[in-house]
Image (cartoon, rainbow, N blue to C red):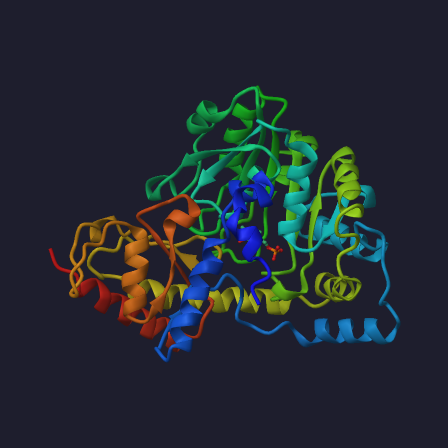
Length: 411
Ligand code: PMP
């Protein structure tokens, strides 16, 4: 029985216009293709993964089990329990030197949710949101869902995949609502220093209507001893215009638990809480208990995982070095490499057919048994994203297959 047959025939009028403004997550599409190829019996190494491959630490799981048996199974305050907000406040104080009261903190179902709520609370039809590319593919789609217009500012390897003050100056208008800063960044690992944030603030100063979204979700996956900089702490004069977002997904290997948080001016947090109270209600009560244990508990595993990612980054960079057609920069943070593939375009695949763009490169890599995500999904065509949240063996063999795929191209 095909229950949607009648609707599909007239899709344009059956669904709201906002569904046509957005596309599904490209990394989900890429992982789905990888799963289908594996299900068809092919050996596929999955380098599309956007989450740590480590287990959630035991003391965190234990806190969740304890919460269930202690009867913490009911609704909580819509934007987080007082204990959870307290753990978030302590995290910001301890790690970032930022002081937030409970009514300046919101807890949602992942960083994704807290960002979406902030856009819903602030973006009106036609408002603009400045997003440097390459970007996490969700930002522009969320802006469109909220009725706004993403203003994409392309960056490149030469600038460390970071927006410059001159580029920002050109992108800002009276309609700008937000500048999105994601540091370390997904997918290219670009990381802003304090001085770079200050230089951006100098430009933003003249546009008082624009907020700064600081998406710090990769804060703890930062390499080479580089200091972590974040707008509210490093440009204190901007704290009243900054919404700082973080969460437990990446630092504590808790992607499935769905807890993220944001902190900023009370007026913004109040509006976000209103939206959340009329949409999702509270994030999962049990997950909040687990997240409290994560934030308040021992932190050594956070650094152990970072060191493990650093080791794999080296392995990956060695494996990719010297492959003809790839331009590989070392990411400063996060767990992806984002090689340029422009030199592969125009070449011919052995079975015929020309590699015209990054989507073709990804298809060609998949033919050689490696799943990756096209850079166009991140607003940076001519690149591919390769995750190193995978075992050493997968990474080594993945690089071998990518080398074979590149060498198989002629022309
Ligand atoms: N921001 C960025 C840059 C991300 O890469 C991700 C996860 N892929 C998120 C936010 C969302 O994280 P969460 O699981 O907390 O929703």
